[in-house]
Each structure stands twice: as structure tokens, then as C-alpha cells.
Image (cartoon, rainbow, N blue to C red):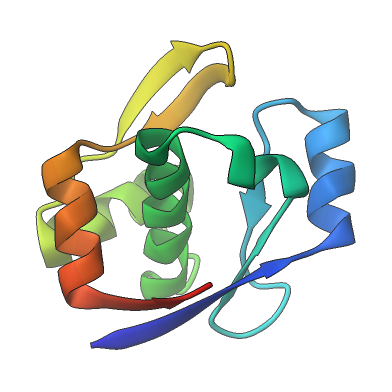
Length: 111
């Protein structure tokens, strides 16, 4: 089981202010996903969709870009990351409740 830590980051807040759909980033610190304060206000499907995508970046070592991150999550865990237009951002990552359960059963996320 991999271990991923979630951490608030002022740079993530700045990125969110500059681009409304940007809530998180990786590779600022090893095995840590940095999130903006606004991230915690998202509904579960979006919150976990964003985390799944960022975990995919970590698992793929940043190879393959955005598509590579999603492919890695599907290849390893069968998690299908969708992109949904919503009041929280256009083309925002989203996953189903079933995929959320998969993440919690297979990945150790430290909040």
C-alpha cells in the first residue's frame, strides 16, 4: 500500500486564485499533494477525483502528463477519472463512489 500525504500550501492557494479549477499540485515535496484551502470545500466526488489524478502523477513519476496520470490510476487500480463541468470549475476531475472506496482501500492517504 502506498502512503500519500495531503498538505495545505500557500502556493496552491495562489494557483487557485489565478486559475479557478486549480486546487492541487504535486512534486513540490516528495509523496505529498499540496492543496489550496478551497479544496476542502469541494464535494467528495471532486475532492477525491482531484486526489486520484494527483496520485496518478506521483505514481507515474510525472511521465505522460495529465493523460499519463489518469492512465496510471486506471492501470493500477481501475479508477476512471472523469472530467465534469461544474460550479467548482470547468473540466474538473471527478470519480464515482465506488472508485472512492477503492482509493481508501488501496492507498494510505494521510490528511
